[in-house]
Image (tube, rainbow, N blue to C red):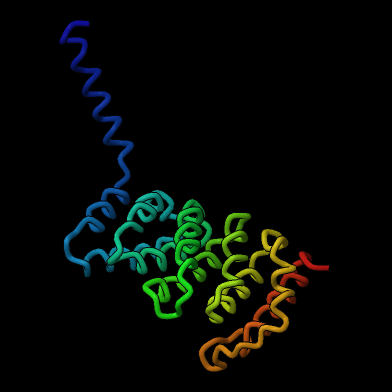
Length: 205
């Protein structure tokens, strides 16, 4: 092919690439790559207002979970986006699973676990989330069991495999703080509420 014929083809490909470029992705790629954490956090907080329009940047947010400084803000953002962030569930499940390996209520993961649980609740549940939530029901920290039970109560049919685990918590009366948590005063009450919700959803008969 002659150079004269090749140049228009190259130009056409360049124009096509420019047309396919997503300005939103470009904007968030630039802002999340900024050295200033305030710029990055403001960007993440603005993303929470996008709703379904944020779908193109979800892969970028998942990738940004590797940034330890921004991680909690990213998880909160994914949760606020709801179902549009479902592609993030495998990574969130993996992170929660890893955090559950530490039995301490004061470890580095202590602040991250409830944030991940809330994000899963808001995004939606599937068999993968049920698997890791069932593990959370057995965690030695009562607040983890308490919150995991509540989240499963929002899980619909996906939570069906966890029903026996929730029933087994009926004697778990470890106090978690009436004025801190609003799903009952102990783990047993949170599990009972979850079972009631699943019954109302037609999952438990």
